[in-house]
Length: 257
View (cartoon, rainbow, N blue to C red):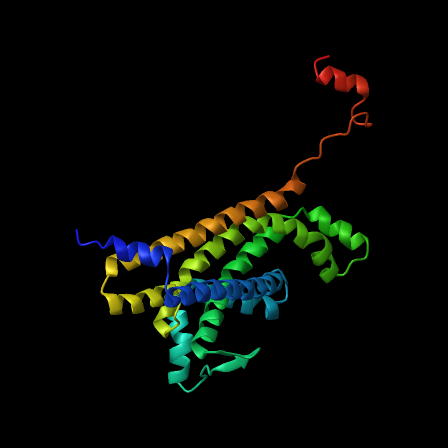
């Protein structure tokens, strides 16, 4: 087996600047695209719940389109096809003193648009899981729809949304490899650049697989912490000693005294 352990350990433990750039860009695109997807998903979910067809039907079409076409096609269409058709072209822009290339802008927008369709369904399901009595209680207090969502419904729905939200971000980390087709130098394209110079394909692709496995594992720990953190409010608090719910004599019986 033609496997060079020196090359493997070198790039795994002492990654070059090309690898570090790709790793940083992968994380940055994932976070920004996920944030965009959550914002779009929240707006789309609220519009989907509306009975007004002018709000409901466009969102249904958006979700149908994004979920029914491959993400890779969406990325290429947004960056290449629109420019080729003379409709829109992504140009480099300067933001906070940094130049953001057009392909990175297209990558974030394409991933965010795709993610927004899935987040819309997740958030809609989370809102639907909230008891209808919560809506009636809020309306009886004279709350507007926006205040009712912000103060009562969304905080409760978030506990239902967190697990699938974490899974979606895990998928987002891996989907960033697709933007390499439009020249974004994320982790996969960085690996391809190194392999073209070293010809050590097996070793370097194994390294990039371990990097992605490390990223998703770290996110898995954070996701479990989030689920435990927001799931605490679902657990009933233990009654205090001497409370009205349990008298002192009842507590002694429960303790076996």
